Length: 561
Image (tube, rainbow, N blue to C red; front, side, top):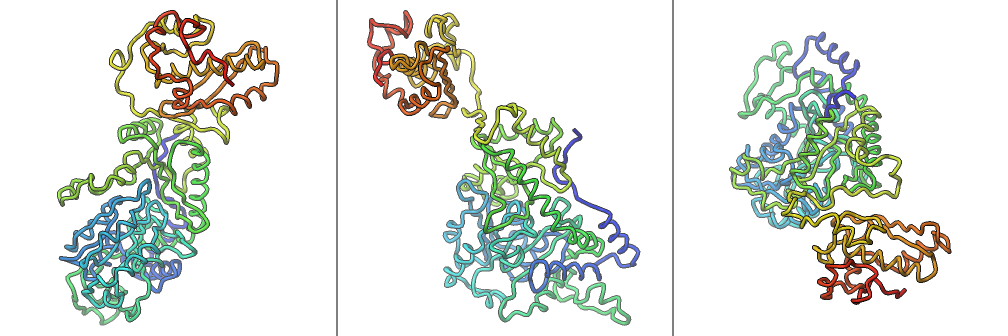
């Protein structure tokens, strides 16, 4: 199997031909292709206008600039995101106000937003992580509830009459929520068309917005143009007209426009985009099936209310820590599989630590990060490569013939094992193990009893297995019986139960299993309680074995059921 990259661009002859056409046209900077691409995006996103730029980051910052958010203002941002969501707030001189994740969620805790709102709050930047649209309905509900705190500082803010809701939709181009498409839900939306995104222009991005009562959309579009072209009131296309060389610099703006070469790639990608989304959905479905019943947390990309753009496949390894996650990443790399992590929370990064932020204030974000791994998800993945990834993550450990729809796979349920030898075990000899069990009659599980208290399952479960087997024989279900139990550390109930009557059963095996399952409780807590194992009986049990004794009272030797 050749190495599997994380997210290569999907470029076909259609994109190449479109770029060649642009190169031959003599117009390669912002021109007719860029304007055409803007119109296509606005049409696709069902918005009045769209403006194409050189990145999502540029789009986010220009939104803040046009809203005139700056020094003394505050902008609420998720702690769990890429730096672009927050760095732009710092660029304009405003204060970044981080919000932690919801417990066991990659989305920010919407209930915490209201606590963070002050009279200085001018905007909330939500993130559509992995291509799933954030809960903007909840955010709008919060900002409308807090309208009385809002103090506008420019005309657009006055017309909004509340905190502006901004979507960092770097991942969500084409995603839908309640039949609304990304780009048309938040007040302002910024997309990324970077090389690894679903739709790429190599670098690039686009910004859309909803109509604001009292604000002319054409005027708003021109504000974005001004800020993206040095504050120049004419773009190259208009300056190039005969006699139209003269221009003015209205503001000290930036240089972050999209070129026609970039737009050419985007125009071709947009023609193919619905098919690309369908491929991503199919891959996600295969991954979901492969991880079914695994001890992992997966994102719900598709349901009756929302449809993801399927940009990233995030897997949370339940019960694992950062070190264990990184170990898996390295193991997969050795198998030629490139993975990633989305994201390392911003309060863990040097730049934000230097601004005074501490990850200890965002515990849920850290918990999501420490065991998250992102698997390859792109439209060049073959069925064989998807199966190979699943095999290396899952099936390498367990043969496929042992897995069905009812299978639960438990991996290292005890967590990291770092202490062994005499520090972690008493080191009692193998001869004592045999003596503790049945003198060689029964199968030996590998642990002696005498050095362990009844909370240790190899002791208490052996007692209970004896108890259940005696009851089966006493009830004339069989003449001979052996009970085999398997427990996983950290799990209260056994993961397997096997009853062997050695062909001596008087009733069907199904009837015996039914009797056992309906009569006995194999949980660790119940075994200790039912057999009264916290009595001071262990000194005499340290010699002469644990079973068949009549010189001391052994609860597991009685027949009760």
